[in-house]
Every structure is written in C-alpha cells, then in structure tokens.
Image 1 (cartoon, one colour):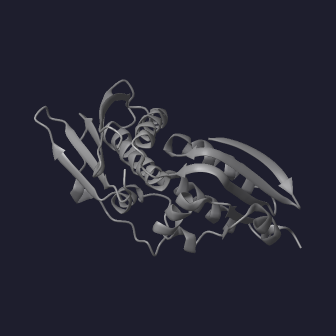
Image 2 (tube, helix red, strand yellow):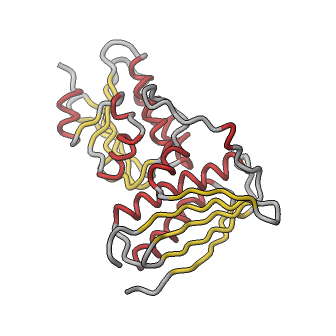
Length: 140
Length: 115
C-alpha cells in the first residue's frame, strides 16, 4: 500500500497557474494509485474550484497566493484551498437550469457532481477554506 | 491547449489538444468564432486529444453552436471524438442535448460536409 500523501503548494492567483496545481495533484494521485477516471474528475473539480476563487474572490488580481493542500490515504483524497479573498456568498449562487443550456454557471454544479463532499468554512485569519473530498472506491 | 486546423471534404476541422480550461476560454472563443464567421462555414471540433474541459470550455462550445445557428444557411458546428471524461461533462450539464456530438471525426465530417 502506498504511503499516505500530505503536501502543500503555494499557488499564484493566476488562471494560467491552475495547470501547475493539476499536475501537482495528479502526480501525487497516480503515486497513490488512484484510478485515471477518478484523477480526471478530481482535476476538473479542482479546476472549477480554483477558477472560482481566482475570478470571484480575487477578481483575477495577480500577485497574491493561495495555499493548497492535498491529503490522500486509503480511504479518500482531500483537496483544500485556503484563500484570503472575498468570501463565496452562497445566497447569491443559483444552480443552473439544466433544461436551458447556458454559456456560464456550471462550475459549482460540476464540483458538487464530481466530489463526495464540498465544504467552505471561514478561518480565524479572515480567510476561507474550501475543502473537496472524494472517497476511494478502488483498493489502493 | 494547442490547436491545428485543416479542411476535410469542405469541413473545417479544429483539432484541440491538452486541457481546455478557463485560462484559454477567451482564446478559444475567438478561434472558433473566426472559423464560424464565414459564409456557410461548417466547423467540427476534434476533442480526441483534449484531456480536460471545464465549465468555461463547455460555455464556449454552447456559444459557438449558437453563433453557427445565427450565421445563416449552410453554417454548422459540431464536436467529435470526446473521451469518457470529457463526454461526461457534456452529459452532466445536459449540454449534450443541444450540441451535436459525434463519436469520431470521420462521422462528424460525414454529417457536416456540404451536399
């Protein structure tokens, strides 16, 4: 059984940096023997979560950093984003109308479809932690 | 995201590769818009080598479909060759009910080529 993974990454608040985060996480996930479908779906959920934070919490303002965390054990993968931008406002979120195809508005919906748990909580330093969890269905 | 464009039987085939995400959405919108905005343009996007498509990429495809719909007679837009994970994103968002999706590039070219 591969050793549990615990790693962190400081990521610039830049959309082009999301690819670096995907490579970092998928490298660890392959080392931990997650299956390729799960890795692809986690990469997509990460992409949506990171782009939401960079676009909505930072208005794509470069020059700040997000602290990412990745924990993988024989039960689950947990991906965390700590940011100090403007908090997500759940009351302003509208789920997409799936009967009316649109050009925007699927990001949060996709995260919730692809991950088993999605939580957001305020941190003592004024920031926010977004935590995405996907349980393993295959044997490590 | 990289791309290459060639023409097969009168159909412009735009072959994308790598991840298609929010960081390239604007570039992709302009790329596809430029291909669609010709008289009677028929555009097929080859997704065979696309490793990931996010909600921004889905939005660009929906926009391109509508742009082709509004471009007049003879214009057409479709997608082909989506792998399992990419196809699942179209399915989850139900945009697969709007967009024209073909299993392979030859099937898409066959469907879109001028009579």
